[in-house]
Structures are given as C-alpha cells and as structure tokens.
Length: 346
Ligand code: ADE
Ligand code: ZN
Image (cartoon, rainbow, N blue to C red; front, side, top):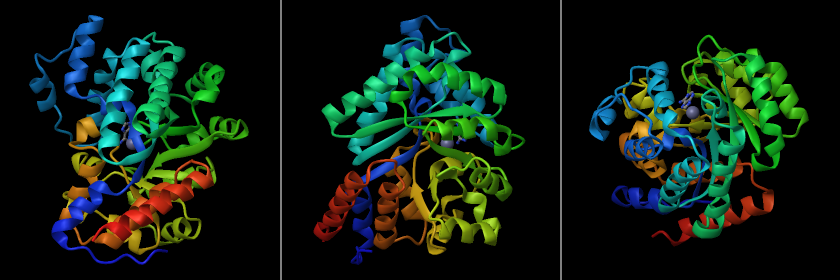
C-alpha cells in the first residue's frame, strides 16, 4: 500500500474533489433532480401532485427509508420513453465526470417501470446508450446493475429476470433494494442462485436499517460479492471479522444515512470505525438528488465532520477501484493514476 503524505486540513477538500474515484452505489432513479422531474412530466403529460419544483423539494424531509421510498417511486413515474431514461442517466454521468468519477456502476429498478407498462427494452436501451456515450464523450466508464425490489415477491423477481434476459449483454450484475426490514435476503435465495448460474455479479443492500443477520444471509445464502450500506455490521464483532477477512466491500452512503436518520449526524457516522477495522469501505451517493449531494459532496461533508485524513481518502478511493467489477488491468491503471495523483498533490 502506498505511503500517503499528510495534507493540510484546508487542502483536504481539494484533494477529495480532484482524486480519481469510482462510484459503486448510485440508484439512477435517485439522480432524478426535481427540475428534470418537472420537465419530463411536462414532456409526457404526467400530472404531479406538487405545484412547483420548490414544493416538491420541500417534501424531501425523511424520517426513515420507507418515507423516502414513497416519494422516490412517485418521482420515477415521469419516466416513459427511452429518451427519458437516457436523459436521466446522461445528467448523472455529467455530474459524475465533474466529480472526477472515472467509473460508475449504476443501479436501476425495472419493476418500478414495467409495473406502469413501460417495457424492459425501453428502460435498458435508454440507460445503456447513456453508458456507451459516457465512455466516448466524457471518458467515464459506466455499467448497469439490475435491482430486484425486495418488497415484491420472488416470483415477480423471476419474471423480471426473464424479461431482462434478452438484454443480458447490457447489464453486468444483479442487486436487491427497496424496503429492507421484513424482507430478508433469504426471500430471494433461489432467484439469486439462478442469476449466479447465469454469470452475473451479485450485490445486495443489507444492514442499512436491517440487522447484521441480513448481512450474514446476503453473504452466505445469496453469495453476494459486495454489501450495499452494511453500516449495521459494527453491532456484530464476528461479522466484522468475516467482512475484513474476505475483503467484502461495503458501499457506504454517508449523506443517505444522515437524511434517512440512520445516524443523527455525520460526526456520529461509523465510516472511520469500518476503515480502522480493516474493512473495504467505499463512499457513494445512493440517491444524490434526494439526499443533498453527489459523490464529492459525500466525501467533503463526511471528512469535514469527522477524524478522517489523506490516508483515509486514499484508502477509500483505492477501495472503490478494487471493489469495482472492472477487469484487473483497467483496475490497475486507475490505481496507478490515483497513486500519481496523490504524489503530485503537495
Ligand atoms: N432504493 C433507492 N435507494 C435505496 C436505499 N437507500 N435503500 C434501499 N433501496 C433503495
Ligand atoms: Zn441504495
């Protein structure tokens, strides 16, 4: 591991912003800004229960995950055409490029759209075209991870998988999201086993609000390669050892945890504790349009609130590349650039 020189506190924010990084936990529907929601509603003739962009934004006061999900699914109802999905992903990828994100793995929730009569083809083709253009035009590599909604049935997930398989070259992995408590990973054991046979990468949200037991079952029954969130792991010492030993990455989302009241403030967040225990934690934005910031905002606000320094910044950026689903030669290229960036920053 590289030796990282200390950086003066007033320059840490600049370092965090300019270092190259990967984003591994972003729900593309959670990047839909209120302005774009209103523009798409008008384009598609969809009526919204809010009078203005400001009225919508002022509804973003969440008390827990479910209070957010209700508004998030309503916001996604303006997405109808392939161009809508393209425009949404393009807007996110432009922000990502500005934050020096060089690689992004985007979650999408097809059931939110197919349940409204939008075809799987429309969803995937729009998102995928934005990913292809981002590589060519912005120098950002981007791939897609299809998430099953865990509040729906396993049968619904199997049906969704069937609908998506004709487009299987356009997404690289499978995830599990939506309301966690009461919907444990084991509910989806068989459909994840099928996805594993098909060769997809596997991830799952676990230990966001749910107990450490959900992280154990995501690992042992779903056989996921990364845990999304995972911040409840600190309540279980044996689980912490397992995550450290197997280098299972956690895609932590500090501003999301703050806005959904998982922690009372960023100073109380356990990111530092996860890193100190040797876990492969990463920083991500989750649903940036709803939680007050994209990736660099997550980095700068978290570092401003807590005892984190340049060494932690390096480890978080390096973890983001190591935990990504890119080939090992490209990973090494990104890490070499990261090292050069830290060398030059003085
Ligand atoms: N879908 C979008 N954001 C989510 C989150 N933070 N947890 C679970 N499901 C989600
Ligand atoms: Zn998430």
